[in-house]
Length: 266
Image (cartoon, rainbow, N blue to C red; front, side, top):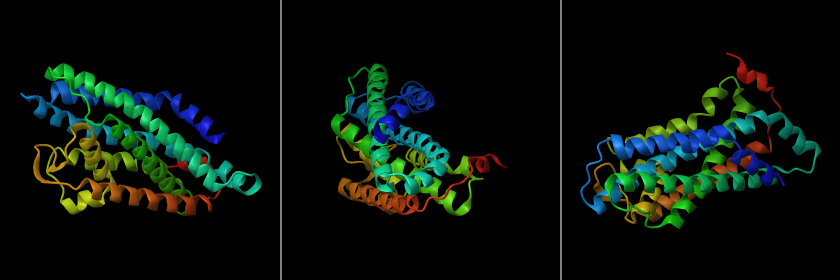
């Protein structure tokens, strides 16, 4: 029941579609038509497209996390009383919303795939379809799950322990990290240890592989450096997702009622 209503609220959220799809289409247009697309072969064009697809996939997932974070923020008091005086369990809340967010991530991912194919194919003159589209959708599902858990942990930790005065900054932390790690792929490459350890590097590297069909090089912007082991990337991402799930369960069980007006104070 909760999952259905939450899924409906996310799907009907205009801001989520505007920023999560509309703004991402703008960046895809910039990557395909403005930022120096000078590839001459289909293989080069596919690799270039895969880089932009991986970057936009990461950022679109982080935008979902902001929407989720505000949902948890506004519901903190009702959740605290619901867990205490109704049959709603913290585990049911986490599982239902995690599933709904994952589904929305997959839906948005499908739109990102379609617009990526249209824009980069029209620019290059080649039909640049993802090599493993079903794995691309699966990655968007996992990204939605990860971003949901990260948002819950950040917001409820602030709610329980530090106060909500900084909520306007906290909800954007996933987006800030996504831009930081995402655009670093277009500049100086990070050390391989950092890439393997960071979920914000794991996600675009795995998205790159689902689109191009090849393992991600350390420096995706020019295809140089050693190839990264996708199995290590998957294990790292699943580890972070599992860790955030444990933390989310711990924090949600101890959620405290707070006035949302606190978040509006300067």
